[in-house]
Amino acid sequence: MTGPAAEWQSLCDVFSRFSRHIDQARTVNINTNALRTEARDVAQQYFRQTRPVLQDLGPDARLDVLDAGFQSILELSNRSNAAASYKKQTKLIRKLLPTVTSRIEINQSVAKIGVNTTKEDESVIRTLEGLVPSAALSYKQAIIDLADDRRISFRGPALELREALRETLDHLAPDDAVTSADGYVPEKGRSGPTMKQKVRFILKARGQSKSSSIVPEQTTTTVDEIIGTLTRSVYDRSSVATHVASERKTVIQIRRYVVAILHDILEL
Image 1 (cartoon, helix red, strand yellow):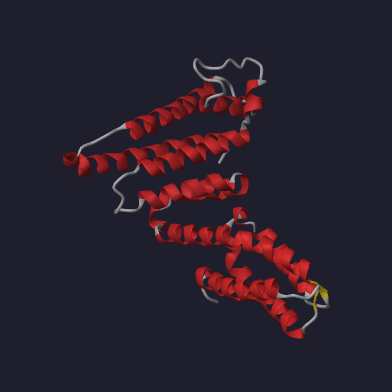
Image 2: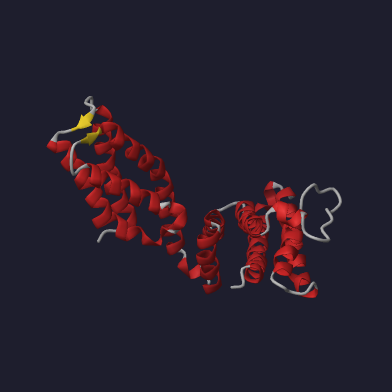
């Protein structure tokens, strides 16, 4: 069995030719044995060769949609069917090709830096993939960036970590649920709930005492403040090397903070 990237590229090439032939069809129905055989072949290649190597991509890759699309193409190929029916499925599949391609690349990048991925990271990623797939992607990207010795700025991974935390909090504590809760008071200068208030809402909803939420609340505020300072900082040419090293160290600490918060709110 070939690797995910090679197998996926092979399928994309075959599917591209097939969808082009379908788009060029000028008949109402697809009647020719050659085109129906091509439809069956591409669907079988997906299920027999490609699908097995895509198992670890996670729900954000929308493999369920691909499964349904190729299954429909396989069923259509069994008899004469409308060209429009084929085109509907090829259009749906075509939209997902870039998504799957990017997920494969991210997964391979994470695999290459496995030594930098802790068991705690892996637990966070698995949980987020089932809960908020986009947050899992942000977290993975931050890990990849932190391992890149060629980077000259680490503000990007800091923002990715904050985004992973923010999206998780938004999922578990939507704004309207937080603002309608008893005792909610907006913080000065804020029109909506802060991340700290969302942490408090989540832990309170799980029956935890107010005192037990103090540390994760304060940690959330610290993360926000550190990232704000990091993104506003400036440095001159003479201090680039020192500043980059300092940034990286700071983002590694942010990563630890984010893991601690996620550990509390996700009950890992």
